[in-house]
Length: 176
Ligand SMILES: C[S@@+](CC[C@H](N)C(=O)[O-])C[C@H]1O[C@@H](n2cnc3c(N)ncnc32)[C@H](O)[C@@H]1O
Image 1 (tube, rainbow, N blue to C red):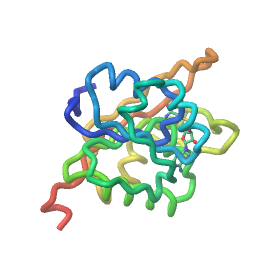
Image 2 (spheres, rainbow, N blue to C red):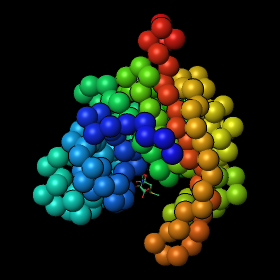
Image 3 (cartoon, rainbow, N blue to C red):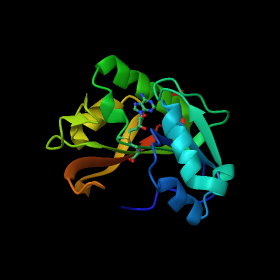
């Protein structure tokens, strides 16, 4: 995938969980990183895993559908949180919140279960997406730049098909 962000940019990972992404971003030189999760337990575990590195990370416990940031962010990243939103109104709220959080022409990088992916995640039902369905859900605020499907190998050895997409939020003139 083409590089859409650089270490100087601010990146928020939504539904951060305990993924190692933040450690990898810190190692790559990123210093403006926000972890958002609806679960305080997940954020506490993430902070514990990061140890001293957690000093470089902002933690926000919030629902992705209503999260607020103190300043506009450059990149909104989400792997495996959006797909928990199975209701159209909830998906629309998520899209509005992401568009409001990002600077104009910021990037949204998302991975959801693909149409051939699992029907549940952590025992909860999910909405499975193709690039086309993501484009139709996000189209009010974003342009699709790139998408692909890939099999993900879980820590417990299962494979899951994901749809990945990179989108750009509308420019200031498109918003006005
Ligand atoms: C399957 S885990 C994925 C964690 C991580 N992104 C990864 O790829 O390993 C989903 C995470 O999203 C969080 N989550 C689910 N719904 C959410 C919502 N509406 N707003 C914010 N976080 C949410 C869960 O608490 C959980 O930590």
